[in-house]
Image 1 (cartoon, rainbow, N blue to C red):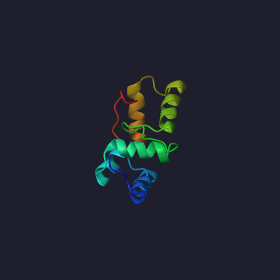
Image 2 (image 1 turned 180 degrees about the vertical axis):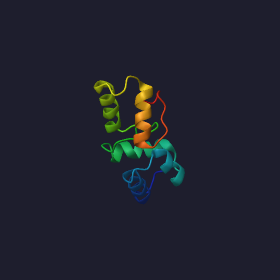
Image 3 (image 1 turned 30 degrees about the horizontal axis):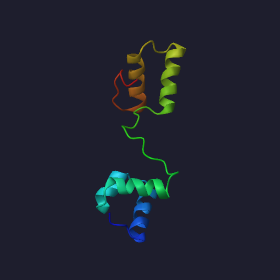
Image 4 (image 1 turned 90 degrees about the vertical axis):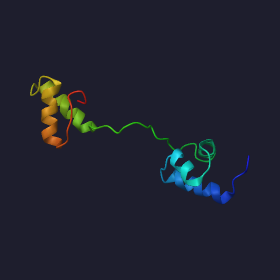
Length: 98
């Protein structure tokens, strides 16, 4: 295994600090993913890793608003809440999302 120079490690650490994913860093630096992960765990163990997945369509305040609509009696089911949130947010939603 070829060892990395201090400048290469510093560059990888700067990319990690900027929030780039290990996969993206591996593709831009031409180092394998396990090398990037090893550097991450050795030099930046407290740096949070990405949770992955899609971002939420509804913010926490939107969720609270949906709960308020149901508990106050202004909406009886998810489809009514969906219609209300669509007019408020101007984004397409489904009742399954709500």
